[in-house]
Image (cartoon, rainbow, N blue to C red):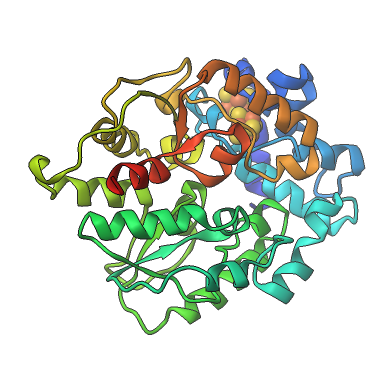
Length: 351
Ligand code: SF4
Ligand code: SF4
């Protein structure tokens, strides 16, 4: 984001009665005015591209959840402003280590995790299909079980998925979140070149934030499709006659909409349709659901830069969700200790 765009965003905030003030999970958890969307955007503009350490830490206080956008009449994209501000913190040499460590890891391993994702990817079963499962760094770092479940479920529903190639381990969103927009772009080019043989591409993501990032940022061949696993599986399920499906599992669920799935991809129906088919009990809505869903703190590198705040967000969301919580993002599921839609479908179809 250039200086002019930042100025415009800041002016909008400056004359705004802070309509989004109550919506930010980070400022709500910390009770700090400087961490409201208004406070962070103002700080980004005031620092004029040369922030100091405390300002960098304020920029870190964003999960990219876009809840503020629901209440912003001006459509201010606060995370985009703050990721640009993080880049200025990296350039000024005041960024936290969680951001500055990323380039070396990406350069060496093609992702930003500490775990050996290549080994995890190699342990997944071979699979062929017109659409490719892009398991992503979060699911692979969490042992790859969800990727295995997704391959199984897609096959059972008659829509088998292939696997994205071994050097397509991560889409690079974390580079953008960590203040390295140019490297995020270069990483994307590298990953796309590994899939260049296929035109057009049909990519299916486990992590909704990655699907949103790729949809928005990757130039893909005409006719390509990028979607979340729940959208893909809900279509496949709709083609399976009810009489051919196994009996539903006992129990119900409270569904936590991942922010990126609800607000960025606007996919509210598919996970609910899948749960309704797989469970005999009711699929219930927690407080703050759908487009107004509340963040669990798992994204935006918040866990790395403000771990206590991230834990508090997860704790508070867990208290709202109760015992039968289910979600559809590997990172949200891990943060909340919730079941995953895909893993629940695997249990259902494996009967
Ligand atoms: S992000 Fe939008 S709603 Fe929030 S303070 Fe700025 S202009 Fe107002
Ligand atoms: S995107 Fe979410 S965490 Fe970031 S400022 Fe807006 S409401 Fe707060």
